[in-house]
Picture 1 (cartoon, rainbow, N blue to C red):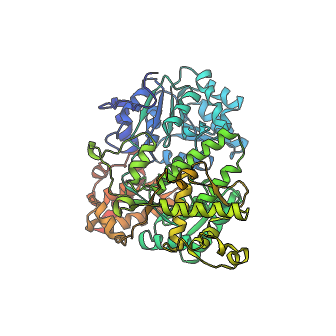
Picture 2 (picture 1 turned 90 degrees about the horizontal axis):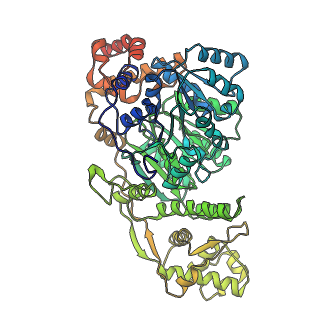
Length: 626
């Protein structure tokens, strides 16, 4: 293998002139970022590549530029059928001849695309993996001149990953049937284990491997105890992200619909999305989210992969994600434009109980359940850490946090850095809880959930406690020094650390774990996290102004005028607003106020096709604002 899978490939200092020309002429950028130049050079020269790069890092350019430099058609294998039209529209706006083939098309449309492919009239062709399984599609590619194969969302091939797609296992056909055509596989999420699995399954062990920095410094990671989750979410949106586009993830379809309805009742433009909705409703809601400003999508994890909307300002989770990989992938959909964004999670005791129960009841063998448990344990460790969340998140992907090239133990932009929590010795409370579980099983031969255990510990004679005679237990009231919420935090952290287990009875009752005896016997101490008193968040406008040094105050009116103009153009052309111009490009126009086509061409993100399509119209908006 030319580059070990766990070692980032070296960056190069530049790219071939042809690649730089495409970058500037087609996409309107003057220079590559990070390892883009090295990756592009590798593929342009006919080599294979495996690329791990965070969302917003510019993965698409890593195969789009080589496809336009090399002779023939760039074939992109993607699971994102619902987004292919938008991906094609975005390329077409830059003057790239792009098409797709998937199950949404009728025979006449597929025939038109196939004829264009054979006539050499297509630069980029998007294929769903199930379409590539068809012999007719493979025969089409045999007859065409293919410049490269790009495998997008490559983590879908990993069975231990968070978004496994069986059709991806068939992609070994690419190097078996077309061994001379370079392949580039790309993903935004992979642990070292998933990385190795992608490499092995796709036959890329001898490819060049590029591992970019996974840090997203513009995203503020925050996890808070769940009390009244919906009210917490409402407060978060209203005080920090009013009018912003965002995504709210829920675990169940019912929760999605309830949450979307509740937000809408409070005047927030919220829409639901889950696999149980009618396909037409899903398509309309996704289209509105992509094309309109300020829409909040409430969804299960069925939504989001491949979403290119750059101005998603927050991603919120109302339920605990099943893995750190899933959490990172989902939160990475915020702030693709590099502007300040928030990853917010409300997490509570019931989340832990529910996830443990789901693992116990899951299909699959013991090894599969162990893997699910390992994923959950890592997610719980991230939630319960008293250290910098960014440092722990990056460590999960095998990276160290080193801002400015210096090793550091804190990022300064996560909740544990902004308001550090206190660590305390929770051994005695843990022993009290475990003793209560022991006595209930020994004296009453029964198991109970967290709520009942907490009632006993705080000395609360609820009707159920009194009816069952549990107020006669020796542990009744011995935990009165802590409040009910504090006890729920104790139970949550004991579950997270594995000192308490969820019984496999389907009711979420709690039992001793293999390590409980060490705690009861005083051989193991239990360190816990005490939530700090949170300072009020800085005003939204203040935070944004501080984060946009390239956006002088006097440029804001022009920026807003350009956004209104962009919205009109997007509606007229039935494309997402970012396909016209991104916010970053509009900020550049507002800051420089170009008064000629030549000056406008110097703004980042304004390529030749967009200059021809929109140039004069943009200059009219600038002149009117002046």
